[in-house]
Length: 237
Length: 237
DNA sequence: TACTCTTCTGTACCATGCAACAGAACGACA
DNA sequence: TGTCGTTCTGTTGCATGGTACAGAAGAGTA
Image (cartoon, protein in one colour):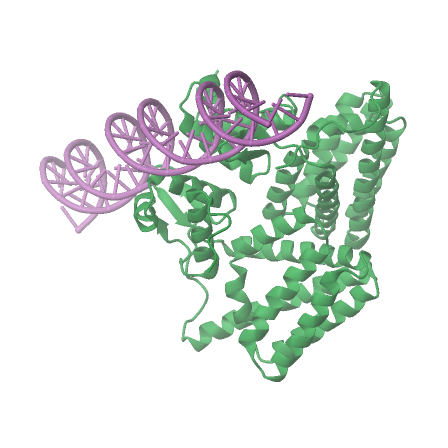
């Protein structure tokens, strides 16, 4: 029951963090309007810190501020989603290569532990537990690259994708769990062998495969829900 | 003498753009203090839009806001500079690969024209003209990748490096002009041949080489100025 | 001299009020 | 009915004032 050690988090930070997690977590729909006044009342603060939080989220690509009109949760177009996945492939691939060059670092052990727990989750066919482990896996790869700038930009882009929402979906494709687990396993082996070039290539392939699984699963989910296609929002400034 | 077609650029945008170019252009030293009040008077506006501009520049990584203390032009540590160069290598390499896959696009002709003008600049030993062409070359590579997200993140990082300031320096190393020009030439040939894998590798090597040239030139400049080492500022939050 | 405590100044942080604009709702007119 | 012009409402953009904090400068003490 310890008092906050750093109680001095500015209000705008609190608002920005709160909104960010609501957006990436999916509580706020794409395209939803974010009124300064409403948010100010919701957080119990004045409009100023809310404005500054929204400003930051705009720079992060999570919301779009239309001058004199309002602020809206960013709705990435299909083109943007493709671009973001391409970047995911590039950055995770590069991270794997850098990781391999660094040898035995703590993150490597963490990866091995991750895969062991993942094996159990696969054996139990527990997609929810596995989804969390997948997120941890990719986060470890990025951290293992030892490049904080890379990590910053990577996280920013994953936020734009609202990726944590998507992982679960991508694993709903039949057979993907086992496949994904085996890919992770191979990546770790190659990284352990310090073969950066191969690690980069395999990581890229893995990202492409999981993207494809996601796209397939999205169609599957749509069909399951009786919806014809994927056409919800094409809102663009 | 035409009136501005879009006179409706918000004040904060004007301030942000002005400060950004002053920082990346080198008019504002690393570590310089940016007082809200002073900037407000300088731009003839109130503190509010200045605050919002600074907030954005912070998210872009150009300034550091120390709460209740002040805002300062970001002074990247040597570690951060190395990380940024590593990212430059990753992104430009990936861009070259994507570029090669796109075949005959307008940017390819623009690259060829760029290299031709660069040859003339080299022949005339005009480092200033060549520096501009180098910037254009890299910008074209990025644009040719056809991935706007990649381009956005690339530009953000080059701003953090204040790269435009550095190019001139890196070319002051004897013999680097010719070397650089020949590397550009080879990159274009490989892209024309649609060999993405090789293009990526060569582009990475080129970035590494030009980074090395820059580091060498910086030592050279220091020695020339009679300074012992590179130790100016280690300011960190 | 060295150290501690107090005061003071400069800064960012937040609250609030006014103004300007975008877009919707409405009504007049053809 | 359809179109155009007007009014009106909601929203953000900007200005300003008070507050709280960080850090420097100074006074006091050993």
